[in-house]
Image (cartoon, rainbow, N blue to C red; front, side, top):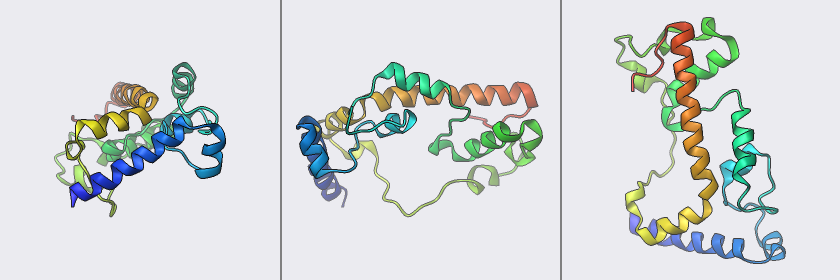
Amino acid sequence: AHSSVAIHFESWLDRMIESGNSSRQMRDDSLCNLPWNVQSQMIICGDPQSSLEPPWDVVKEAATDLDFVGLTNRYAESMCLIHYVNGGCDAVTSDCDCLRNDESYNDSNAARDNSVSLQVSAFNRHILRKMDLLTRVDAKYAKLASLMFKAKLKEVKEECGLRISCK
């Protein structure tokens, strides 16, 4: 099943790369949503039609102005952080303390959906290079978001005396 998904995914990637390399008119006519650096486009409220690769300095400035950055792979901790951002230490509940000997901590707040999960290892290097073309700025943003997330975890630990993450 994974090889079939990979073949269809590569065809989709080829179409997106082709549309990005084509004239603006072709992009306007054929696609209303291009997946080029989608996260970065959302951070700057950009129009993916006007610039497929937004300037990193603009993305970085917009990202550092955010009050909160959550990470899907750290969903439980992200939910605790958003409570802190919105209401301070008093808004962070005791079940956010990872030091509690509560086995339900890791699983109780985990995001669940019915999507197909694929590992990067399911794709060959050729496909991965194509994916990198579409996400060059997003890759930089992901590193910055991770640093911002860790800084907010540290802030909660210092301000509230609470460890939201034991990782």
